[in-house]
Length: 414
Ligand SMILES: [Mg+2]
Image (cartoon, rainbow, N blue to C red; front, top):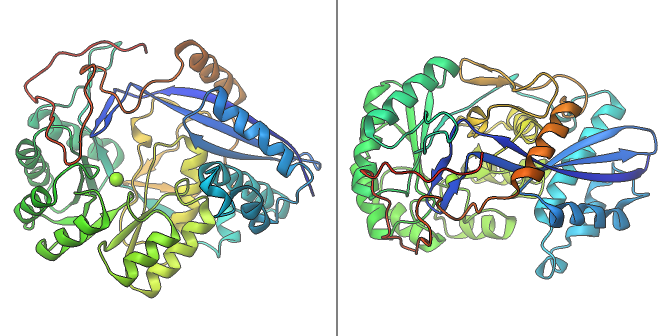
């Protein structure tokens, strides 16, 4: 079996409302590149990558020069072909490799009649638990609804997510407002759903001293972990010495070199594995095995997924013996998906690992066309800009907080 063609299509899929984060905002939709790898036997494997547009599509077109005629089973060979670690100094293709690895695993599963989880060692669980992912949000530009800015709105949002999806763990994306206000919000969130567990993630924008102050103030909460309170392994290590909560990162341990540093001189307790950032599902399985050896925790990270990437997260979560926390997913913020059957369903806060061959998801061609057309109409959005604060940018450590009393919102194209 040989690869015959590689195609990439950029789509944009609306979110229920714009999601605010420490570096800017998701302006009411996600932009993703859907990758199709076709073999000479007529199989089509699916991949997905964040972002998109002409340049992303051109990158995948250029990969045809490397991979047409290549056996999709030779995954390690593909890594050295397109993402050799030393060549990556010049052309960093980790995320491109990830999307192509997803597609090749999908092809192999279809060819062999097994789910990707079987190729990865076999599943230990049929369903993967997820945390609610609570964001501060701007209102939906079309309906004016869905704002999360006040503490009451946040508690109501978490309560309604739990009622609808059944979550038992809750994450608050922070780093937007002054930390004192976010402390008040996190405490109220944790008090509102007793018995559940919590995690907070300000995306590394606090000073080390602020991280310590905040961490010590939340020690009494049932925290899963304290995620990236400060940017950098040294700040994390200093925070860890002063705060009695496990620290987690998806930011400063995202490759094997950094993982080895973290083992030699531990700064982080829980490694959040992202199938895109690590260059595929298989590197995440390898990293989890290293974490198992050194008894570090692991969880599954979300970088903003549609159903194809979600399937990679589910197959990963299914095979990790040391998955000790609920996974993160932005998925419940989406209004639709490009896969057959529409959005995957949550059951008691969990999603069932697809059972079909390969990744177990198929493209809905009509939806792909619809959201590709929407992308052509709306284009990209600046992820690292806040639509309501033109000219703003955060610094590290940040001090340029948004005002939680400010309810004005510039409408974004939607
Ligand atoms: Mg994070």
